[in-house]
Image 1 (cartoon, helix red, strand yellow):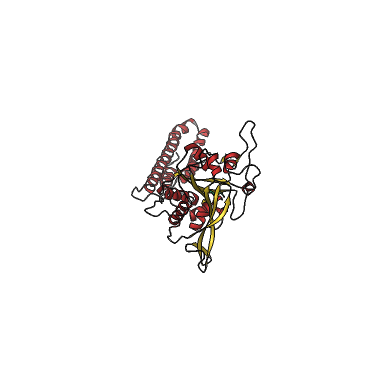
Image 2: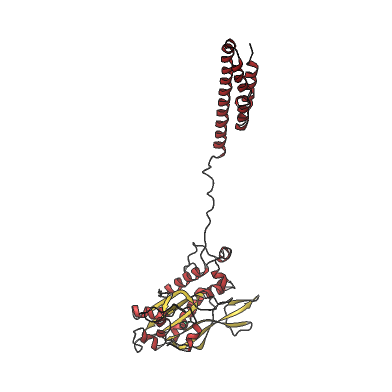
Length: 366
Ligand code: PHE
């Protein structure tokens, strides 16, 4: 009679010593696999006499049972130890500070538009808007630029095909001035508005992009004169640049929609090769920089807009928002404004928590 207790206790010891699930699997193959030692014993039963089989069979089956259950028990042990280790290592410490969520930033154009709205709201101006796809009539004709007027050439833009039955060509507006006409027609007089928005021209280099931003200003009342224009611009630019020493120079100019027309320059000093606004442009080491166009609203524009020019008059101005942003916050390439490069935005962008207010200073600290 063979004795299987040696094989049995050896197997028990190996199984108990198995350190991981892979070792258990290797032992299962070693004993119970096709070539396994216990499987080999089972195969010997076939060649035995009935008496022998009767005495050996139960012992061999018992051995197989014992090995099978020892493997299962050790496997269970290892699995629950693994789960316990995982639970221990993955505990959440709820007292830890939360990971920082990535935050976007406010684009300088949006920031400056908010600053402008804040400054002009304080002066009693409402914000008006108009469409970027504009009629020829609002963009040109009503602003005293009839078909074939030479001033149209300076406003080359993007035209849409003329739809039959519509009122002339549509185009991407070349300035925010059509909002003057639209607002006067919709609301009449008196009026005090600014109209910030996107405008388009077929221009492209470091200081011109095919799309840029302007803010239009318009004041209509019974006895508005050039003095009001000058005071308003001075007050606005001092608040915007946060300097009391902003000096303006008004130069005669020409726009079809204003009469007289005034080009406004601002004095700057050269500091380390950079232009810093402030002081008279005539002072030594200083210069004048052209900043915006303005003037008294042309009588013809008032007429086109449905106002009686003998009762109402006013001033208008238009200034580039991107240019204001560059001057205030020190960017030098206009194209970067519209590249959508997140690194640029990280550098020049502003916190959305930094709301411009007159009391706390309209300027943001990047
Ligand atoms: N619309 C003019 C431009 O884009 C600027 C302007 C506005 C001039 C209002 C005078 C009055 O060049």
